[in-house]
Image (tube, rainbow, N blue to C red):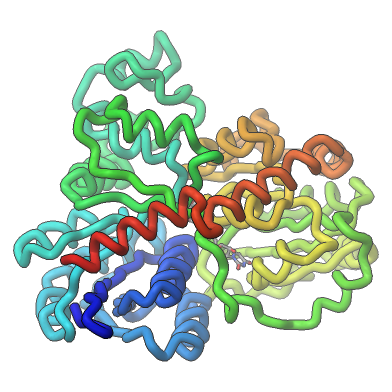
Length: 460
Ligand SMILES: O=c1ccn([C@@H]2O[C@H](COP(=O)(O)OP(=O)(O)O[C@H]3O[C@H](CO)[C@@H](O)[C@H](O)[C@H]3O)[C@@H](O)[C@H]2O)c(=O)[nH]1
């Protein structure tokens, strides 16, 4: 803690987890703290899983020289997991014992620590031992949080066995969600990585000083209510909605998007499945056919590997020469990565074919762009359900989880036409954009939540 003109200022350290879906909200939160005179130390696990993360970090620290960066050098370990992101999270956790010396060397001493929810079981015992108040940034939806917080109790009860009959996940008498939304590994009887990590992380998150969640009250009123009213857990840590975490200025690449500039307002569909999902090769081709047949204009980010370091193949090899040529007539194809904020904030963009990673959902709400949801894995069906209920988009439930079936180009085209031509959805989406901006604007629900937290931390 330090003081400015006699006023105490909080010093907050942030520790993100692996992948852009976790790093981005942490960077945005750090930028918000700077704008509110909070001193920030940003702890970056080193190395990162992807090149995109290292690049995002370099740009970020160049724009925010007032933020201290502390590299957290991870132990080297064999990468033997089926998923590079999960194995990186394990690596960060197993390097946890290297954190205390790093934390004790920080000056002024820390007021508060903020960790990613996937690292809680490694971090919270360490920060508890030094009596450092620790908050969790939950990077998914509040609806997903209802499942996350109740999962240890669910997994230890008969509730999962009873599912065969009811098809609905219940905690005590509270209906959380239909089984069909839940990531399949969480429903399995046998042990698996996701089950183990939900039980371990959730068990520690409930010992935290509080949870910050990247959502806003009017968007997820019901789920936030269920948690804060003690329906999900009898004594939940306080949960504060602080989203949508707005993009910071230098996040935009300031590239000239000449092609987009030439398209009519709201006419372009942006197609992306986030930072860590690659569709199967045959599904990529069907999607290409669907995009052409739909008649819509589009910007399509094609990833052919979940790790960008390995995303080496030429697009033409993946899509095929003929399709590649036809796709170019109506749209722009980008390999691996595009600065999403540049695209979603462009007036020509009116729709987003999205996997419903939660950051993408919040970014669509922030920019008033309607979603055609195509969840692929993890929390994404839960998030798609939130999108559909609030009216930010539509969801074709029959498309299933990633790889469950091959969705045909004709079917995709039909759904794109419906979504892009849906005038009431367009209007609803603009209303949601207004609500999102109100929530983080002066005196809005998210603004108040964060202001109250910071004033409390300034007293620590
Ligand atoms: O070409 C791209 C692709 C992604 N992004 C950005 O990267 C982030 C991606 O996050 P998200 O949309 O949440 O997707 P994932 O990368 O898939 O995120 C992981 O983390 C999320 C938050 O926990 C989960 O909701 C997802 O299911 C999980 O896969 C967003 O900020 C995007 O703007 C880009 O800028 N360019």
